[in-house]
Image 1 (cartoon, rainbow, N blue to C red):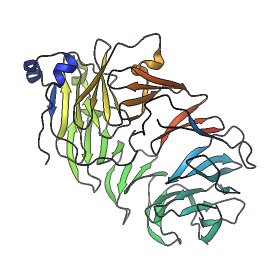
Image 2: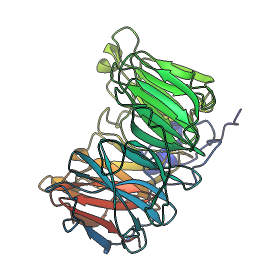
Image 3: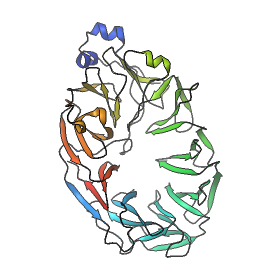
Image 4: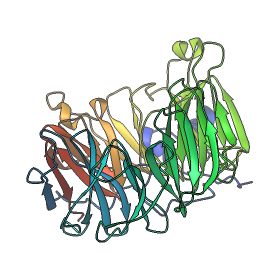
Length: 425
């Protein structure tokens, strides 16, 4: 169990309260620090974008023979400096590998997967289920550096492929069955769901969401549920999993370790939406409506106790924004204050926003990601980077007819037929 650790002075700096008031109202109760830290760039963690980024490279696939008019290329997988690009074409999807450093194409001829798909496993093998494509139907291993198709095995009606460790997770063409298969096609396990399933892999965690609302974290060795629910929202964090139940009589948030151990049940709580390394909860239900101030708690899913919590008469009940490793709270006077999610340390304070500039008003924005002192937010048409130390706008950039994704910590713009990587500082 983590030992408690105080966070002195936070209340004084952020809400100009005396130490006595901090103790009385419980502005900050620090409960320790998380047991794990994320070394990758999941959960809204960015590389350094301190200054306005330039384009590192831009890729336009309109000259490709199989390119579908008006379709947007996306990054479908990565392995070091090799990025797998997917784009709609013909009846289905075509794949192409590029060099992440400069956007140069690595293959002379892309792979047409037809109605199937391709994915990279943890050993750097490219597995492709080809259905109604130029090649005979089958599951192929391909050379990631050249795109040449190699060994072919039974496709087993595979439609979607996701790499996992040395193997591949396959979803069949009905969408109801998920299986784990070795690269040579040997089936390790298979499981049928009551509705069509979608697979997500995060490190050693296999998450399956079915169209009937059920969610599952399965044992990689057997496919049996470690964590599951019939109807809930599920979020995966570096150190564990959160399940949110929103039914009228079951409003709560449950936290689990990835091995399936439940660490806590938090009744009348809900997750605050945002892409972050740790979950933030607040109250829900009729009792929350009657509250006159905001109250928030930060958890490490692997720990039985919350890390810290915050409440104060000046704290708003809405518009809190977890983002990467920080959380930005709204105050009732329209200012904001930023905290480090892991330690509960106050980082800075934002001035009142310019109401005539919604692109620079966090109330109207969603978290894209955070790296160092910079938190990047977006509204679908523009990116705005804030310095969390003082709330100043570090830079802004328009997104033309598209959206932004975070890939390995890089900001990637998907705009029309173009894929653009923004260079870190």
